[in-house]
Length: 170
Image: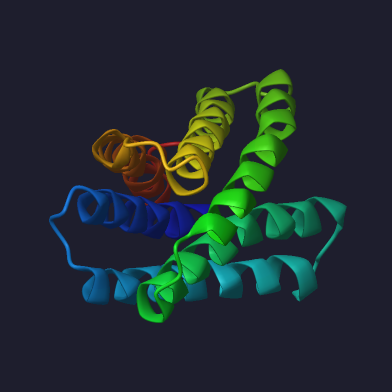
């Protein structure tokens, strides 16, 4: 399931990065955000309440819901005209939450994938912090954030998701 989720996280990050770079319009970007928000929501519900749910799968669900809520909020803001400050503060919450997740993931890593996934959490923490600076701090960094978002979409979502789906990484 992780390969499926990461593959579409890669898509949504790439497209949101392109949106920040002015390559996709406000009215159009919500489609992918709602779609991937729905995928991550379904995955989270399965992890939390499906057969064999345990403490680890519930933790995975809770962390995945951080992505879900972010994507739904981005999509909703495109239709309601919000200035994004609420999403920015949520991004700070997620960025801070991702720091111990990064440390735990890296400290328990024993495989290439484990280390890569830990570095993904570090990258996501950084990205969410950039969204906090952009949306709450009103820093003029939209183009930089867009470029980082595209890069992270490829390196933390699309490529590892594709590799997991094809059995190239375990």
